[in-house]
Image (cartoon, rainbow, N blue to C red):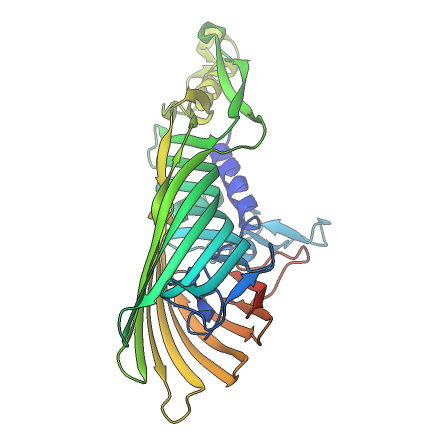
Length: 470
């Protein structure tokens, strides 16, 4: 019996998420790009020179992924190929890969991947009511994963020591937002804006494993402790369970979750959120700005919960065992008892409907400063600080950009950022003659990919859109 068996299931689920999602609140590379139509998604005070209507579902498609570990840290070249294996690739847990090489790509703290996908279903921006107004309908999906270094270390290098893993978090959420924004000048220097958003929740899922610990340091007893909880809010969602018997007949039977059932799509929850922002022109050259985005919540109508028992698993060895009961406890009996104990520790049981719950969105704070070259006005330099405030999935970033507008209908820029996960290089191109707008950009230039098209790192970005302007 291998004590790491339960954790390998956790690792498998985590690795599946590495190639499964993407992230974007906005195209940060375009924060200082003049007349980029969706600057208002990063600061509601920022207005456009042109009015616009987005092409349905093509106005802005924003996909981005951030993380400090990824595919290349989990999937590696197989050292046994081609001599004794026909598989070119293997996982970091392959026993023929050294511990040092296998764990080299993981952070010694928290290993995280965060992401969102945002699709602008329909949007419009126009001047009226003494300012600039926006109406938008967006589909947004986000996910996050936060795993401790000790989890990977335990999976790869189980030894006689204590592994204090703390909490393991995996979450995902999908909703539609209907936003109404307005910005206006207060005076020649100050411009403010706000956006009110109605939120229609589709689904939210949160898996948390609390206080996970493997104490293998003792010579007499090994102990695994921790409790897993899975909360899912989605209309028509329920867990399906199966009845199984314990190895020890005296213990009877137990139920464990083995599948889920979804009775069609529908509205899972409702909420509201606000974006607040301002821009202040210090003089002809310097401008500062600030915004707080997604300050709000969704109240979900239901919450289906499944949880483990929280009972610890204790293994004190196979001493004092015999083939028959005449000379001590039988080996099979003791092995069965350990199997029952591990079952109680690991399996999830349906806890039933817990009623509604309220969750936050994860707010974003943007702080910007730009300098327009007095000797060459088409050139502007900018610095943007972005902080995503979202519990275990929180991250921060600083981005320095150079922005150029060679023609009145053509502009863009290049930039470099340092964030909680990596160093990134980005760019944006914005074409906006009267009548039509096309833009494309990346906050992180896509690097090497696997043959399946999966980025080797967990940092990738692409934003593209087309709009009608006047």
